[in-house]
Length: 257
Image (tube, rainbow, N blue to C red; front, top):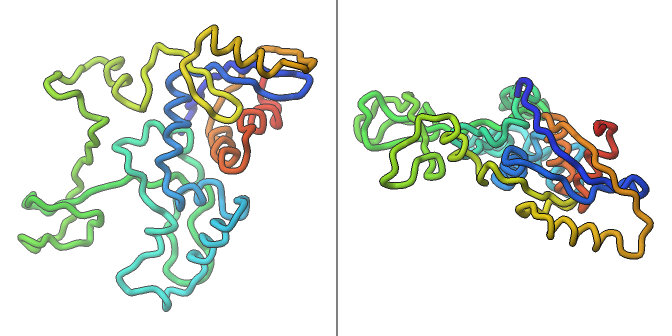
């Protein structure tokens, strides 16, 4: 991830230690939206099976520990434990990159699985040296047409990464930024404690403040937070088990000022 950081402005009730909402830009909204595209196995790998509520963590560990002698010879446990993410460049997931080294899953049933918290692998496609009209997800496959090894990586372009039909691709960085992710830039978004995302407006923020304040003694204050890799993982973990995600991540840890 490097030094990637996203700034948030939080409206906090200092008495109840709760976040009412955050004012966020495109980068943060793209990140939280991108969490919906993570395969279940990638989620468990990122936040580690031991810290997960429910049964998915135990299911992950079962696959991790089962002896290779029980697996079909043409199956690789890494397909379940290290699923690839269908992103052309995974820019929206940069906050989750660089955690661990992404070690390979051993084929013996020794129980030493993928490195905890390693980033999800990017989805790749391969073709043969003759560029026949075929593609494979593994470089070991043989081309059904020319029988050569399909080891030449080809670029995977999703529709969202391409310019609209009939519109020339823009060479400007702002144009590239506007085509990446999910939401438009130059807009401020309101993200509630439970990760409801709407465009920010004076009416919506006042309505939410009034609804929260009715019948309560509240003391509201603006605070600022930086979202990096640790906070990104915290948001993913909290989103799976809590309705007060922003409060859990930014007020439990003293990283607001």
